[in-house]
Length: 328
Image 1 (cartoon, one colour):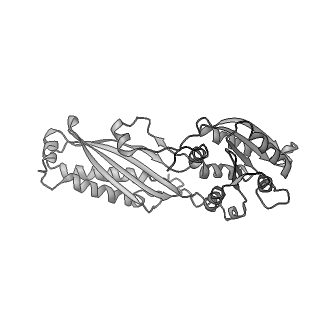
Image 2: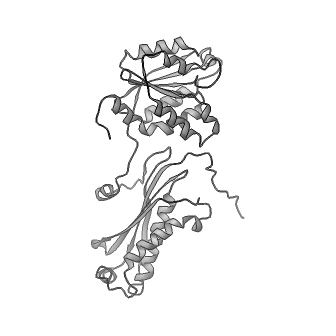
């Protein structure tokens, strides 16, 4: 029976920096390993050819795998490192791109191509070769950030590849404010505020205060002033950033004696356009009131989640700047 197959639809996903490293091993046996290290293989240098083949394999992953998206890779490096005690080679393929989907299949295709090339060039000396332990070591990028294989990396692997995760909001006290007349009156449940709280908690922040406020200028402005006296360092607001007559979140924040941080709103709109062209209608903004960063995001749960995907990776750095810590 032929199943129903379709390529994943990534048209509305936002391009982000993606990186993946895959690895695998080939056991050569002592005679073949010795000849390889001494560069005496009859077909030439297997390592040099395998590293070239690995790059080719990564670039052609979409041709080998039917449902794999063709990606414009920006960087591929293949390394073949000897494991003398096992008479083996460990192959690594690192792939990177700015893309809407991950590059793990490209990294795995690169490793597999390199290993098969090693097999082809070493089999005249030792036909009993064995390929194994092919796996994704880690991947970075997208909304999930860093993922590592359950089998931990060695210290040497961590030093070589330096996997990067989102910086965490350690020891940051945060507040979440929902702006909605109807949610305030209890006409429907607030769904966006809990999404913000969950995302902040996932980044390591401590949620010290949550509240649903009616739309308007005074309720929000007064609450922000009050929070600025309670050692709150980060406030995320959801709602009231549209063009409706009661969308007054920006006007409320403008009444504060606060510094405008225009880049965060610009970044949100620019990156959100990959999800919808309506992002340009959003009046999402950020302000700094003393040492408290206030960010206003749209009111829908989907927009809030996308906003945290966009801004989450830089929030910790922003908070370090607010605290006066050294930064790049």
